[in-house]
Structure formats: C-alpha cells, structure tokens
Image (cartoon, rainbow, N blue to C red; front, top):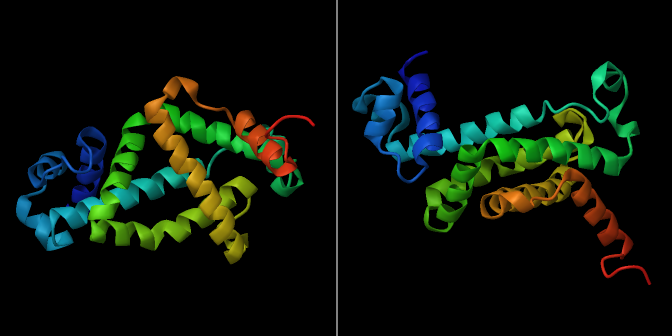
Amino acid sequence: MGHREDLLEGAKRCLLEKGYARTTARDIVAASGANLASIGYHYGSKDALMRQAIIASSEEWGASVAQVPAVGGGAEARDTDPRDADPLERFAAVWDAVLQRIATEREFIAAQVEVLGLLPRDTALREAIGEVLPEGGEGLVAVFEGVPDTEVDPEAARVVGSFYQALLTGLMVQSLLTPDAMPSGRDLATALRRVTAGEVLGAK
C-alpha cells in the first residue's frame, strides 16, 4: 500500500482504539507508519482523514453484513429466491445476524454512536455522512430483501431504507446502554407484526 492507503488504515485502527474525537494526527502517524506531512498532502487535514475513516469503516461493515446467509442457510438457500421466503422470517433472520455483529464489535459500535453525537456541531462531518446515507439505506434494503442493490426501487430505498437505518441506529445505541436486554430478530419481527396488525395493546 502507498502512504494514502496506510494513513486510512491507520485512521480506521485509531477510530476503534481511541474513538473519533480523541484520535490525534500523531496517533494516526504511529498507527500507519507514515509521517505528519503526508496527512496534509493526501487528505488535506487530520479531520478530513478521520471523516474518510468513519465512512470507509461503515461501508466495510455494511458490506460484511450483506454477506449474511439467506433464510435457512446452507446450499439449498442459495438455490432459492429470497423473495419466496416468508418476509417476517427473513426479517427476523437478518436482524439476528446483524445483532450478533453488534454484540461482538463493540469498539466499532461505540465509534459510530460517538460520531452521531458530534453531527449537530460538525458541519463537515454531517455533510460527509449525509452524502453516503442514501446509499446505506439502499444497501440495507438489498440485504433484508436478499437482492442485489441494482434491483432496489429508489422509492423503497428512500422510505424503507430510512426505516432500517432508524432501527439499526437505535439498536446500536441500545447495545451500549443495555447490552443484556437486547431484542432478538424474532422479537423485532413480532413487534412489527403486532404494530401493523394493531395488536400493541393486546387482544380485544
């Protein structure tokens, strides 16, 4: 790798180990083996590099989540159109896989939640994340529907993608606050069914 790639990898490591706001330029230099001048040359500033690091880390995490097995798993699942599976079963199964990732990657989750708190006061960070947010919603719809990104309807990406992003963000925060009281994928599917069926207050 060249210095640019080394710096980005170093910044991503610092993001996990020190967090977004606490990482200094010297931390990145130590983690990357590059030099201070190369940060300005390749990224303009340490803050610009850290913005790129949070976006790259999020994209990589999202790409790995996209590899979750289809409902049922195994070779037979690969030969089945995911759209033929029961929607709530698929919803529960994918969330179980996502929740497992959340539970085992606390440093990444902590960095994501930290950045959320910085957005109101950091215009450049807010704009950078805002630019990639629609793509993230599209990716989530593709994951939950089990189809390629290219098959996702733009309106579905906007509306349903925002729904999945809201759930994901809330679950990330909840995992840091009450990790022992997290819902399962089945719980989330049951909640969705009850809300849409008007059964939240119990049977009438």
